[in-house]
Image 1 (cartoon, rainbow, N blue to C red):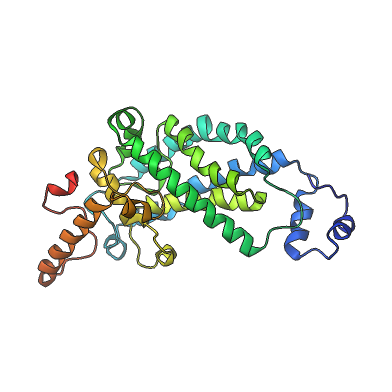
Image 2: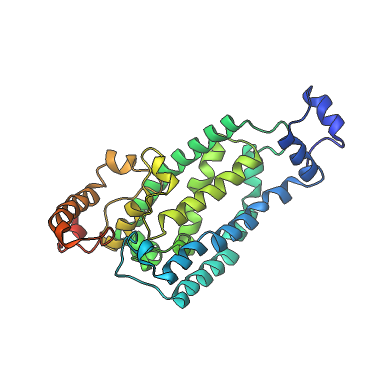
Amino acid sequence: MLPFNTIEEAVTFLGRNLTMAETLWFNYSAKKSDFYLYCHNILFLFLIFSLVPLPLVFVEMMKSLEFHKYKIQPKVSLSFSEMFKCYKDVMRMFVLVVGPLQLVSYPSVKMIGIQTGLPLPSVWEILSQLTVYFMIEDYTNYWIHRFLHCKWGYENIHRVHHEYAAPIGFAAPYAHWLEILILGIPSFLGPAIAPGHMITFWLWIALRQIEAIETHSGYDFPWAPTRFIPFYGGADYHDYHHYVGEQSQSNFASVFTYCDYIYGTDKGYRYHKKVLRKLKEQSKPNGAQNGASYYVPTQDLKSE
């Protein structure tokens, strides 16, 4: 809750007029508790999990050749009922695990110093902190993901997420309840190291989940704006990890590719792409389309 009763008091405190964004923030948050503002995350996550994957559902149902050529595993097609079942499973986990986790995490958010007052952070400050959050989450998630692919971690926890060998948008948060709890650590680690404003925190939680949905979309669209992000993995990169499944020792990173490159855990993927390029070159006279990327006639890809 802001320590000002009026905009005039806020202006006096800041020593300047409020920006338009700060005025909107004051009018919305002045009488609301920090806990209430923090709980917006629950609403944001519900809307993101429910709405962001819907365009991918429509694309899948349309079975348009214009979009199908961008499907990474074109031989795998899920029905509407199968995708809706995935959504229901995700919502069940949301109610039982994700929502309560957000609620009980509030004391830690207060402890690390997430701010709700004025002034609002600049765009540059927000972008800088979001970059730090993504880098920290990606690095810590990489090592946790590698652990989850050891025999015990996979069989007891991570295999649930890999039930979708050809991932779909709704399956991004589909996982064992313990995996959801464990992977909550990397998400909070960045804000704990570089605490910012609640608005930055909202953006971080929202963008990370939107990124995960895009990564699990099952489509490699050439117009995706994320293609312009340096070292960004994307759907094709992570889809390979799902396709190989339990035996996968490749592409562990959640967002970027540098960890896999540094630690040598992208060799299977790079070998796969090399074989795929050769096959496409050989099949060009037959008019091969973009798409059938994981149906390569070699058994070596799953052992790399």
